[in-house]
Amino acid sequence: MTLPQSAASAVSASAAAASAASAPQTQTQTQTQTQTSAPVERPLVQYKPKALSLTINGKAVGPMQVPEGLMMIEFLHEYAGLTGSRLGCGQGVCHACVVILDKTDGTSEEMRTCITGAHFFNGRTIRTVEGHAKRNDAGEVVELSPIQQKFLEHFSFQCGYCTPGFVNAATVLIERLKREPVAKADVESTILSALDGHLCRCTGYVRYYEAVKDVVMTTPGLVKDAA
Ligand code: FES
Ligand code: FES
Image (tube, rainbow, N blue to C red; front, side, top):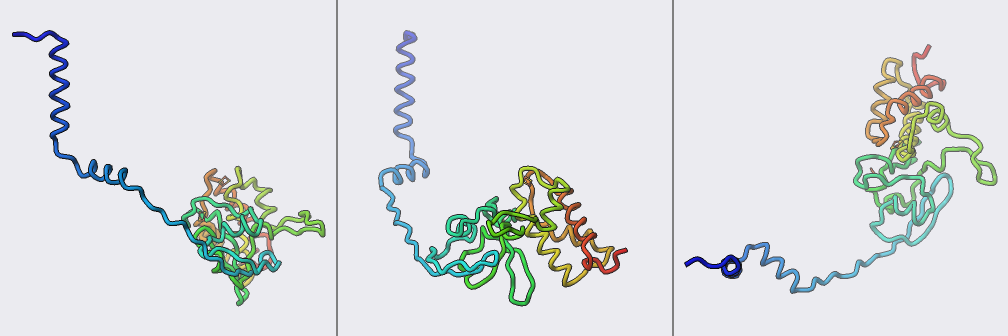
């Protein structure tokens, strides 16, 4: 006997439903049911405030109560009102977020603020990109730093998102070369090494490099055997 088309479809659908009902559940299905049936309790995050004082761009900041564990980039943006440092990757890779740490021995170094807690800087002295240019009493910029000026002249940046990091990296390099001049033959590799960790999504690397080299070669005392 041949079933009509509609009856055949109904039998087929019933068989599939019965098969699905009797099939053993996979582990994923069981987990999904468990997750949806049992509400997940999420404890409130408890922020523990802790005092923080430091010097930024020559000015004393704090003491102020800051959540323990807060990253420095968040402190700069949300507590210090300094938004020039850029949050890029947030994972310590791109170096857009670096500030300059001025050490007690007179040297300086870059610090990534997206992976360094604000309290690491307690009692320390830093510079951000806002601190490089000279300003008048009204706070207006009246003169850029040599690195900033050369970045402009060489059209080094496009969107500018990475620029604060490059400014700080190049500034640290220039300060190091003032203490330890480099041989002329090593200028290029020294600059490449200093800028190496900084990523630029607009790929402005060559013009950044050329601007820094311009500063290095035209600032007296940075190159040992300069002509
Ligand atoms: S944002 Fe800090 S290294 Fe990328
Ligand atoms: S200028 Fe755009 S990311 Fe470097």
